[in-house]
Amino acid sequence: MMSPEQVLNSAPPELIVRLLDKRQIRIRKRWAIIQLNLWLQQGWVTAQGEGFFNLTNAGEQTFRHYLLSQGENSLELLLQQLDIQLPEQCNSRILSYLLKQDTLKSR
Image (cartoon, rainbow, N blue to C red):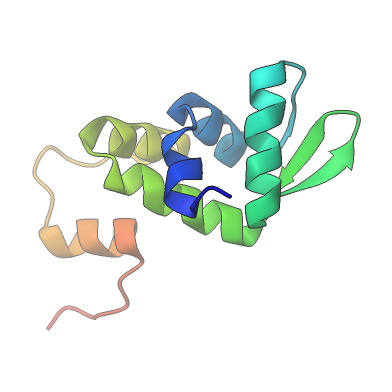
């Protein structure tokens, strides 16, 4: 059985972003069905039948964390998906709060 890290690393980021955006997707391609079945085993999605899959809360958290860990391009995709535009210069505490849901208050 594959580890969660291996399952995530085998996934195309576009599929993750699409699932985060829609929360429910319909899959018809064989490679995507295989990928979603791996996610189903991890508890990140639920199968609804006829190729439909829903994102779980655990899946959302896992996928957002994964995209953040993948670097700037994935971070930019995530911010676009959340419809967030940041100023060119942004306080590091603001970024920390937005990206990590940091509950530490500014002093």
